[in-house]
Each structure stands twice: as structure tokens, then as C-alpha cells.
Image (cartoon, rainbow over all chains, first blue to last red; front, top):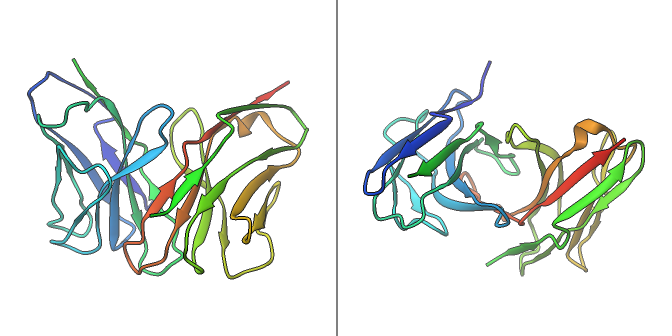
Length: 113
Length: 116
């Protein structure tokens, strides 16, 4: 079945460590997104990508980095510069044409110890 | 920049009853799309319903319908015959179409509890 796979589902890291969250989609979607979800704040956009080798910052990009070397993959690195990284992270993808809906993965929960 | 406001952090409804979740948004665009997403305890985001701003007719999907008031910038979700499985966080979202990588702006969500 087509879909979006995020891994790992749960991740613990120590302060000062970088961590990479994986996002893979087999929907042949062009656009991919990373959102962060915190209690009471809804979903906030971190980065998004329209095509391979191209990506743009969202509203809260500081302390994060991404790459888009393949159409199917859009990994997110949470760097040690991110001051409050504990959160739930959601990856999404979207087909080319509007108003294409966003399809979401099941999310990754990152906890910094 | 667009903003989406959901003023009801939590709501409760009895099974089989009807409930309406509110959403307002702010934009200067004339062409856009609005969505309601559901996030059950599993945390998987699921599209409930979608409305295109140029369509006057309110969208309906089975027990879910919207009341879209473009002039008032209001987009409420009505759930009829509520079921226990409707218990979830509900997010209203706005999309300005820009092509492939149109972005969704989300509200802060409404937690809906369906009770027996």
C-alpha cells in the first residue's frame, strides 16, 4: 500500500546530540513537509520541499536542517542548536496539483533527556 | 500571513448528538482552500473534509458537513450522529494555492470527547 513511513516512532537523545528523523513516501508526490506539534500550539511548519535538491524554510526552521536527495525521501535533522527539541514531528507529502490534500505519516516523538 | 483561529480548546458531546466546531481565519486572498483534519489518539492525521473557496456550496462527507461563510471568514465543522470513534483532536487548516508546495496553516485544535 502507498503511504508515508516515519522512523523511528520514539527517540530519546541527550542534550547536545544531533538526531535525524526519517521520512519516506511511495506516493510519487512532489512536495514534502515537516511539521512540529506541541500541546496547545497546533502544527507549525519547519521545512518544505517542492522538488529534489530544493527546500525552503518554514516558520520555525532554526535549529533544524533537511535534505532532499531523492523524491521519496525527506529526512529532518534536529541539531543541538534547537533549544527546545522535545516534540512530536509529523512528515507529510502532497501531490502536484492543488487543492491536493496533505498526506501524513504516523509521526515521531522526540524526547531530549 | 494567514492565521487560523480555533477558539474552543475542548468540547464534549454525547453519542448520537450533533456538535459544531468553530474555525475562523484571516486572509486577504480570494482563492484558497480550507480543510478539517482529525487526529485520533493514534496521532495519525486524517483528512475529514475540504472546501474550495470559490465554491458556494458547503462540502459534505457523510456525517460531516461544513458551514462556510466566506465574507465572515468562518469555516465551522458539524458532526452529526456523533460516534465514539469521533473522539479526537480536530484541526482547521488554510491553504493558499501556490503550486506544488502550497503550505497548510493550522489552527491550535479542538479536542472533542464523545461520551456515552
